[in-house]
Length: 425
Ligand SMILES: C[S@@+](CC[C@H](N)C(=O)[O-])C[C@H]1O[C@@H](n2cnc3c(N)ncnc32)[C@H](O)[C@@H]1O
Image (tube, rainbow, N blue to C red):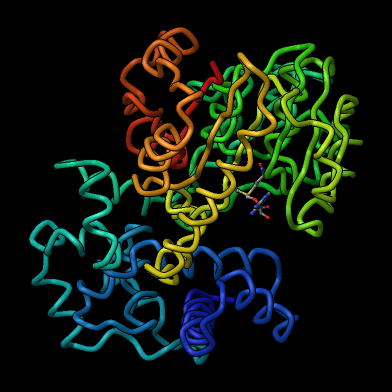
């Protein structure tokens, strides 16, 4: 397929998402199933156009003076691939599968507009209702922080130290290098132009369990828990087990991790993952009745909480536009209830590690403050000391406050994450 066909396909996918209010992954998958002639390269290129359009939806629409999928796709191409409007039209010329080219009015709008003059919310590429939340989180840096959340993400992996070293894994993966902060982190930088990331899951090293795909922010959050060999750990929201596996490696397979999730189906992938990574100190507890024996016994309870995922907008840009204030409220209520539930499993001297992949204070610091008010037997860790002790060379890479550590694409080059530790006296 040439650019025109790919662009037309991307617009079709974006229109389908809008019409049927569905996630990009579903719309892209359906497009692939009904267009089997398209090869892997075409699908990746179409995916790139769709994801760039969603990340930069607002600025792309502003550039063309139109808020419709076609404008997002053309605008995204201009903003993210360095193509010019004239260059795109030249590529579409004579391509019968291409969408109609940019009109004279659109060309004039693009030529006359400089994104630097756009309103802040346009440059930030976020919905209006998120602005006060981002302002509270980041103060005067909120636009820059939001812009970094609208950039293309890297591909991050974690070397599984139960089976390999980071250097050994890097030796197997073209384009990979050590991540900046996480000691076992490996990074392939964000794609450029029309490129695509390699499918690392087909690598023999992946099949042998030498590494997992995991954002560096998630790896850092796991590190900050301080999980160590011999501990009794409850991973209360274990899901597919990304953090469970990281904890098992930190514990060198010694001690015990109990992995639970209220949705049994979400735990399904964990069994194969544990096997491949040779994690031998994990018990999966699918039913909450199985947790009763753990009350008052845990050194560490990890809450990798259900959240809005606002820190992962680089990877899931459709979520940015689908998220509602009502969903945020639902998540906040769930987080509060999970925190209260977690307290019962912590032994004296043990702690709760509370993690979200959101940057909204109402899901993060505010939850910690409210939890500490409700549970006077717990006290917040000294997060500045925790960060400085664990990552002394990276003092400037986080927004660490009294009630937690905040990681962001702008500061730490990771997805947005929040981490807080609360110790039972
Ligand atoms: C952020 S995801 C977990 C991701 C996982 N820890 C990982 O690293 O791959 C949050 C999980 O919390 C689970 N969850 C939601 N409410 C819960 C509750 N009340 N108790 C336990 N788990 C819950 C969800 O089913 C979801 O799998």
